Amino acid sequence: MRTTVGIIGAGPAGLLLARLLHRAGIDSIVLESRDRAYVEQRQRAGILEQGTADVLRAVGAGERMDREGLRHDGIELRFDGRRHRVDFPGLTGGRSVTVYAQTEVCKDLVALQAEEGGPLLFEAEALAVEGAEGDRPRVPFRHRGVEQVLECDYVVGCDGFWGVARGAFPAEPSRVFERSYPYAWLGILADVAPSHGELVYARHDRGFALLSMRSPTVSRLYLQVPEGTDAARWGDEEIWDELERRLETADGWRLERGPVTQKSVTPMRSFVHEPMRHGRLFLAGDAAHIVPPTGAKGLNLAVGDVVTLARALVHRRDTGSEELLDAYSATCLRRIWQAERFSCDMTTLLHRAPGATAFDARLQRARLERIASSHAAGTDLAEAYTGFPLQ
Ligand code: RFL
Ligand code: PHB
Image (cartoon, rainbow, N blue to C red; front, side, top):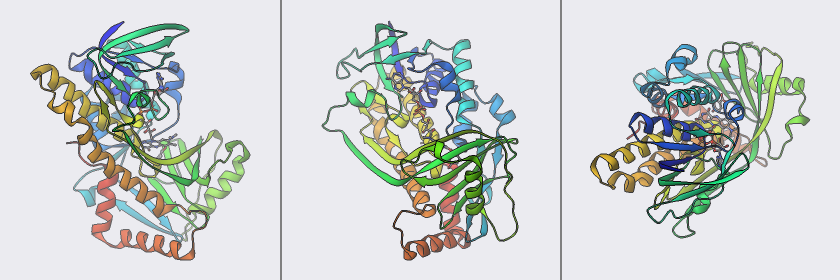
């Protein structure tokens, strides 16, 4: 098998890259180790930055998003029983975000790919990336039990944090920067209308809680839990009781309960692999970087990477110049580190670390009060949350 761009992974990064290249007339083949149902149902992100929504529209994948997605003009911060709304358009000169689940983004992109894109092979596991330093990188893969080889001009590892592509980078000059957090998120999906019209991020002495949503009838909620927690050990009523405690306000707001349809635990980490290119192999999305979900940045960063890469590949084809491919890693990393900073700040602002002192709690409150009372501090949060523009 041969193609111009071999893409490993059909998460948002790989699917969108295939779509961008197809629109530009560059052929690609996508290898995805899991089956289609798994890729379309994996519960993950829910918030699209304005720039992400614009990109999806521009590639013809915005129709259902515009119909079913929910435009959100702010979030609420809760602390000490108080509520503070961060008004995005007011603070950023008109920017907002869209609530539209990653599952739906993936379904839309898979459907487009099937209709008019290049090959997307499910249950095709890339085993390695070979010859990235040379002209003809190769990806040996196993498709439904049969081993084959994909030969390409370029290989892009969009295979997430646990993929194989990063392993093909040499130890020198690769560098990894990381931090793990001593807590995790227990997430539930529930068949009940969201109890608030916008996302609620709550800081509480018992730990962080987040109220989010998937649609006007489906809620998505998260609780900070100790790392290593087994989701099955939390009963549904116990989860609702804890959410109620942490989201409580002094003004009588109520949390509506409903049947819990899914439950899972997500670890929290910050991770960046530099550089994101080795010869003809490129990394994009979670394969190169992870952020804790508190800033809602992971999916949006993946989109930024592949937009930058597609532009560089088109430039190479049209002009013969490698200039943008050479700049790919540095261009992406500037935006990535801003998202790393913001995600880490939001995480430490709102979570209670084991062993945190009363002093730490007071500092968190002071930071929250600063955001609530200073236009500059509110703007800083709103700009980062709605997204830094793509270069
Ligand atoms: P993905 O989605 O992990 O896709 C990688 C794909 O590669 C496949 N794969 C392979 N295929 C072939 N051969 C191999 N050897 C392979 N190894 C792996 C995998 O099966 C998979 O299909 O990475 P991608 O495309 O970079 O996308 C990244 C996003 O999925 C991720 O950053 C976000 O989900 C993070 N995230 C959030 N991001 C946001 O922007 N906004 C949010 O609100 C948000 N909330 C979240 C999140 C992530 C969460 N979890 C579960 C980690 C909330 C949670 C709880
Ligand atoms: C979600 O809806 O899954 C979600 C929303 C905001 C976050 C993280 C996750 O910060």
